[in-house]
Length: 230
Image (cartoon, rainbow, N blue to C red; front, side, top):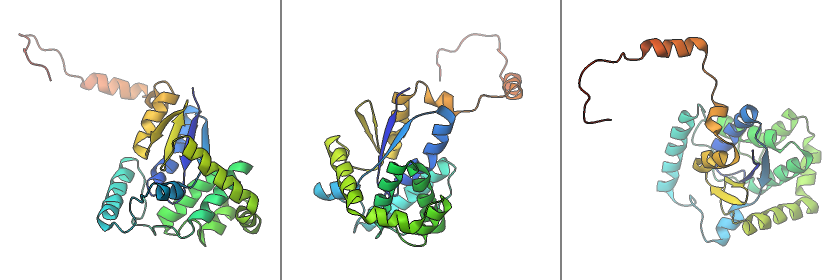
């Protein structure tokens, strides 16, 4: 099994889908995921792009598509959510602190839950302090560290590293130096990292389920074979 680098920026709506699904994948498979916060906004601006800013048609489609994808994965966000984030940089600089201290995954997941389920923007109050308190961290300490020069340098270094690795959007995944961009490429990244990942994630069918399926299977009928197959 290979490790997966998960490159993300809190602020991306589609990253919600990945963030809310990854913990279950990790629990079921034992996959090692390295959470790597970076500034996708900075790289997108450098490339002269911002996929939804001042684009009402694309934004409307995004919320429709996110609702559709969320239903597929059994998620129930309250869409649309406040977007874009004004607290984007602080939310991500706290993620840098959390990655350094070893609690980045629960921080990002709880931040997105409060944003997408409760309507409280990431990187702003009450989301930020309540998330930190929920995880057992003192908000004043963490926020002061996040706003400090050392964290700022680490945030810029992470973004430079992403740029050098070819990462240009969020969410992105790297497995053995191979890049996969977008939540819809998560299954491909998992297939690269884990042999037969769907089999590992799916529950093993019970004996009753197997017996029921066998009993409902059609019986063979004698007669000439058709020339056509479905």
